Each structure stands twice: as structure tokens, then as C-alpha cells.
Amino acid sequence: MDLQGFGHLLISGTWITIQLALSSLLVGLVFGLLGASAKLSKNRLARWLGTGYTTLVRGLPELLLVLTIYFGGSQFLMWIAGFFGYDEYIEIGPFVAGVAALSIAFGAYATEVFRMAMMEIPKGQWEAGLACGMSTPRTFFRIILPQVWRLAIPGLGNLFQVLLKDTALVSVVGLNDIMRQSQVAISSTKEPFTFFLVAALIYLLLTAATTGFTMFMERVANPAGRGHSS
Amino acid sequence: MSWEWGVIWQYIPRLLDGAWLTLELVLVSGLIGIALAIPLALMRASSRTWVKAFPFLYIYFFRGTPLLVQIFLVYYGASQFEAVRESFLWPVLKQPYWCAIIAFSLNTAAYSAELFRSAIQAIPSGEIEAAEAMGMSKPVQIRRIIMPRAFGIALPAYGNEVILMLKGSALASTITLLDITGMARTIIARTYTPLEMFLAAGLVYLAISALIIALFRFMEYRFNRYQYYHHTDTPEDLDPQLRDQHIDS
Image 1 (cartoon, rainbow over the protein chains, first blue to last red):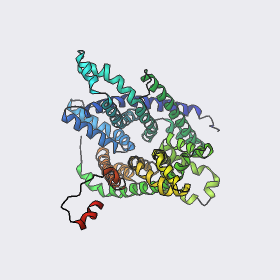
Image 2: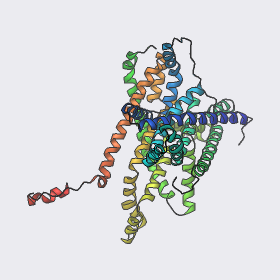
Image 3: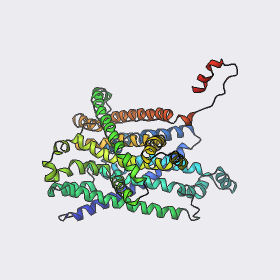
Image 4: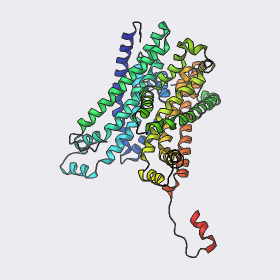
């Protein structure tokens, strides 16, 4: 395939896509853990908030989230900042809007994965941690979370693939990712099929790499190798 | 923040117009998708390598690339070739509506085929052996045993796929179609009230997904009735003539 010298553009777009996906993954995992803790909490308000979050976000198109945050986010943030006496203009760039939208969407699905994984951990583990004199947060981080990882990684791997593909949506609001850069290349070469096919192949490469990495992580998170993680 | 409820009320009829297009896209491409997915799933569940190869590659490509790329490949990509532009297909391929239908159908076919395949493989092998023992040929087995069983097993997961399609249909707005998202974007270009209009659009999406979930719950209850069956003892004092009716109900 002849890329007519636009290869470097596609590579820079790929780098942006990877950055976007990884940043959204990190923030999304935090949302997911918070959501799962809220849903499993004893506090009724927290449970209600968690359920509301997952139900709402899982019913909304990701594109709508991206558009809402990009076009409405600054208005919303300025309204919040107004309460703290800050009246300057706040601008949200496509990258930040993309990370926000994708991590909110990822977090909603990850909440369910973490919740399932947390419910799999026997209650005796909590009790044992407390009996050893650990505080609840310490039990969570030392005893529960490492086991949750092992159970959650296959599910999270699938979600990360979805996230990776959803990064393409951020090109709609002007982020210079793979999609956007292929469109730039197309506008001068007039070869839409070639460049979108190359873009598709790059995404395929990235998702294939993710599959490999997930399998590797599954092995790392399960040192005992008892084969429970499938 | 200035918040205008009036704008939402004023434009909600336009959003509902968009909702029709969204529903149409989901329904039409969903049906075409199922029609494509069934042969793909049957081929994918085969034990012969050369039969499995094509559906494997097809599913791998469509599940591994973003829907946006697939839509753009059909809508913009097709025009690159002189042969396509001069063929009888061009009147279809130059319309964004049909391009969206084609892209969505091909995409959902890949996901549904994978669902159906796992459903086919989840059928207890004893049932298929039983069908074989009854002397059914492969086509009869597929028609009478495999398809109805796989349908029941795949139903809950297929409900999720329809919700994902609904969310994916928002991408139709990127090729100028006026679905819910597309409508919201045109209205915002005129009124500049992004938060209000996107909120309203989001509510329409939520309402549609609630409807789809309810529909699939109902279908599951109906087609997988054996899972919901609760045995009730026949009352001793029941009129003997009513006895059979009671057992049936």
C-alpha cells in the first residue's frame, strides 16, 4: 500500500490514540473501583449513586458523552467554579474531554466487573484481615484488592478493547488521533479507502497487542496458577 | 450557568423525529445482522478448519476495529474506486442512510455471530446426540434442535448487543444522518445550548434502552419459560374436569 509520505502522520496519530486509551484506562479504573465500592456499600445513598451511575452511563452512547463533555463541559465547569469565586474562562481541550468521557463510560462497565469480582472474595478474608488487627482500608488494599485483580483482569481486558475502539470517537471533536490523521491524509491524497483501511489495520494491531497483554497480566496476577482466572 | 428548559420543550418533537431514524437503523440493521450472523455462526462452530477460516477473519476484523472506521470505509471509502462509482451499486452507496445500514449490519453480524456460536456450543451435547439417534439429518437437526435451543440461550446476551447497537447508531450522525444525536447537533448549532439539548437527547436514548431491556425481559420470560416454571400442586378438591386445564396452565 502506498501511503504517499503520510506514514509519519499516522504514527503520530497512533501515539495520541495510545496515550488517550491509557489515560482513560487509569482514570476509568478509579471510577470503576469507586463505583463498585459504592454499589457494595452499606450506605443506602452510596448504593443508590452507584446504581444510578452505571444505569445512566451504560444506556448513553459514548459519542453523546464525548460531545456533551467537549461542548458543554466548560459551561458546566465554569458554573461550578463560579461557586468558588472563579470567573475566568475554562476551556476543555479534545484530549481532556476524551479522557473524561471515555473514563466515565469505562468506569460504568468496570464497576460491574469489580463488583462481581469483589463478591467472589469470601467474607472470611475480610474477617481474617480484621482479626489480624488491620483496619478496613488496609484489609482492602492488602488482602482484597490483589485477589480482585486476578478475578477482574479478563473482564477488564475486554473493556479495554472496547475503550481502545471508542477512542476513535474523540476524532469527531478534533483530537489528532489515528482517525483524524487519516482524514488529513485523505483530504490531500483523495484515497479514503486506502487510508481508512490502514487506520483499521492499526486498530487491529493495537487490539491484538491488548489481547496478548491481557493474557500476560492474567498470568502475572495469578502466581499460584490454579487456573481460577478464566 | 444559564439553563433554558424552554429550548428542550421547543425542540423535543425534532428529537423524537430523530428517534424514529435511530430505531429504524437499529431494527433494519439488526435484522440484516441476524440473517448474516446465523450462517457465520454455523460455519464458525464447524470442526473443519477451512470452513472456520472465513468467519474467523470476518469476526476478527469487525470486532477488532472501531465502528467509526467501518462506517467511514463504507461511506467515504467506496467512492475511491471508479468501478464502484459506475456500478449499479452506486445509487445505494452514495446515500449515507444505506451506508450506515451496511456498516451497522456487517458490524452487528460479527458480534451476533460470536454470541450465536457460543450459544450453539453451549447446547448440551446429549441433546444433539439424541437428535442424531433419532435419525435426524444435519439440516433437520439445525432447524429443529440447534436453532431453537441456541435462540433461547443467546437471547439475554443478544439483548445486550441490541443496546450496544443503539449506542453505536449515534455514529450515524458523523455521516450527516439526522438521528437523535444528529438532530441534537443541528439544533445546538442553531441555539447554542449544548448541555440542555444533549441532556434531552440522552433522556431519549435512556428511554429507548429501557424499552429494549423490557422487551427482552418479556421475550426471555416467554421463550425460556422452562426456567421460570414453578410447579404448583393440584388442589385435592379440584373438579376432575378442570384437572387437565390446571396442569396445562
